[in-house]
Image (tube, rainbow, N blue to C red; front, top):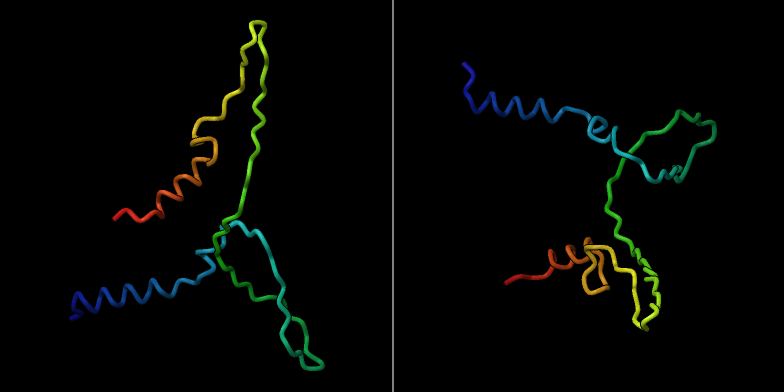
Length: 107
């Protein structure tokens, strides 16, 4: 008679046998690099590729210049375009502000 612990361990081991390809087959690929072996012996025959998908996070600078249009009215005052919502103090987009707050130590 199989104990519950042995059944659980067997189930976990069976789940681990699932190939990694199923986990990554639907990921969008942004860059492909072909890596040749250091040494290929004479007479070797090309047989294709063994794909390895590596996931990464890319954080890059993305600056936007908003050119706020200004008009001078007949009475001498100015009418100016407004920044989109979510920009704090005219310096940070909402995503950058959230990132900074998330990583700021709140002790």
